[in-house]
Length: 280
Length: 325
Image (cartoon, one colour):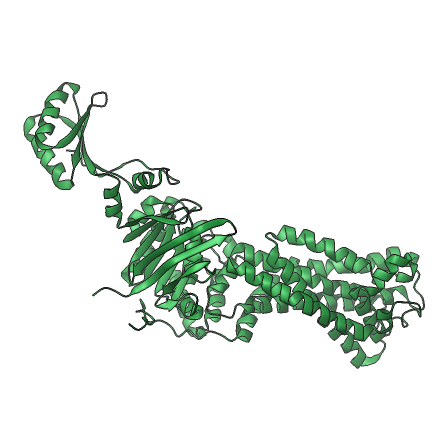
């Protein structure tokens, strides 16, 4: 007996034409951005909070931090922007866990779309989310004296480097988001990771002043390479000290390498964790 | 000729670590009929629905939906079904209308169709006034109706409902039942899970009772009730003095007559309404005054107790399809 084909429909069925991965993903991006529009407070983490960081460090701690051959505000801004980009991994993780918890991912999975659309859509909207933060940081920076001094090409290259690094860290976010059961757990975990990752680095203070062992960690921290690359591309600070670790001597190449390595490590972990979560 | 099966579960098994959530379940749902999966919390009902709707992968076994294999043809399966989950999975931040637009776009449905279908479904589910409000402002019943509207957008021939009325007030529940019956009359096949015996009794053509991941009984509601024991006629007298005479009368026409003196009640085994009218006629001519005469059938709850040894969540009394003479 041949297999029974699509059975009689109750009413005339409308034509279902499953969308391409790109279309399905952009629909999910539309939905995620609609959330931001409905709840602009979602942007607080990358706007008001980051502006507060800028002001706090520029005017409260800044005077006490000595920076070799650069103005502290110019030194600070690239660091804050990298920090904002790093936060996109927390944003993607919280968004994903929330959708998993609320059953929205189940709803999407019951539709005839590529399941990766959920992840692609979530990643793109998180990158947009952090990019809004970076734009706000750039404007704040311009107001307090930060400038792009090395021309358009290098300037744009630095922003692309930020996006690339953000993309790599999004896989970390998807991995964590697929494994945790509640948004609160994600928040707790991500902040425990984010703080040392963005503070034990050259973001807010030069590593030269740290104890030797901590300085080594800070200088090998991927966040430091990206920050140093942005500073050099924007002309905000001179090249790293001659005794600085190797990554800081070649920050652009190392930033790209770190992004590739992080993606290579976390993307498979993230995809398999999401698959495992979606098998049950 | 038999209708083609709309849904088939073929020896489905799902283990979560050591837990055997589903332990070899098979059933067939003919096209256009309603299957009720009845069982207490944790019986494996949701796991069954999740496997059949391709949300989760069976440990072993398989299933077919609209003739498509859930493991080998998941995309075709997803095109043939609608799913309303246990928690209404609508996007709370989006408005009702945006929820349908989102799902319509993910099905790749033409925009004009989605617009028209949205108006039609909202009118049907009494959501027109709330269409442009965020779903988080909706009541529980409204959310379920929106969830159902979303599930029906692509007019699926097969609809899975996982505890569709859990947590709803009685009015919303009967409203939802009416909608479901309407869908069935239009030819939609329903698979619904419930812990409410009353619901399964009310909606389902066939009931599959699951407990601890296994099927413990299956059949029509009437067949299941028969398994738990026969119906009985209950006669309540007005005067206790008539009890002996009434017992004599009952013994002459019925079997297994019991007398409860305190409550002035007599019960006897009965095959159905025919026995009841016969007894009514006997008392009519006897001059014995009656308070009540009724047929007591075992409820599905009794069935459940009989099958599992424990009660389902909401215990209800014997249903009394009685008439007062």
